Each structure stands twice: as C-alpha cells, then as structure tokens.
Length: 83
Image (cartoon, rainbow, N blue to C red; front, side, top):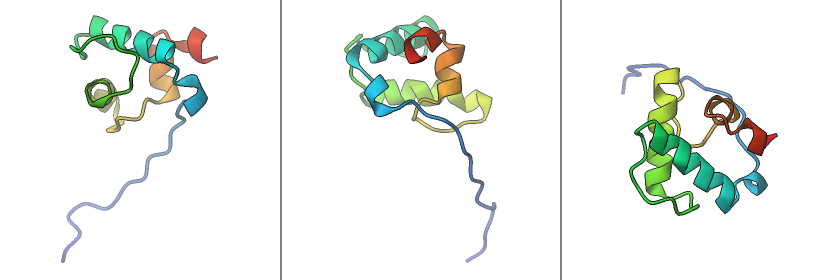
C-alpha cells in the first residue's frame, strides 16, 4: 500500500451546538439560497442538503467540510447571530 497523498490536518473553529438553533439554521439556509448553493425549503434543520450546501460554500476557500466554520458564518453575514 502506497501513500498517494499525505494526510493533511485542518484546524478551524466551528459554532457551538447551542448556537445551531432552528432560527440560525434558517438564516444559514437563506444565506446559502442567496448564493445559489441551497435549493431546499427553509426548514431550520441541519439536514443533508444544508450540509452539502455548506460544503459547496467552503470548498473553494480550502475547507472541504460540511461542518460550518465560524469564519464562513461571519463571511455570510451571520456574525451578529453568532457573536
């Protein structure tokens, strides 16, 4: 077995789970919809479609993860909700 590409660890801040309220997730879904990344209903649930949209938003910035980073939340204008 050969290592084709060395494993790379990425450290980033994520939101505390207590901040992931239905209201916050609804705002996140609206922000992703405005960027044409989310096409589901605004449910306030962190479902598979929402996580996929989060990944699509973060991947061009070098973060291939469906866990919303604090930096991404701030970039989308959700800082007032997060802080």
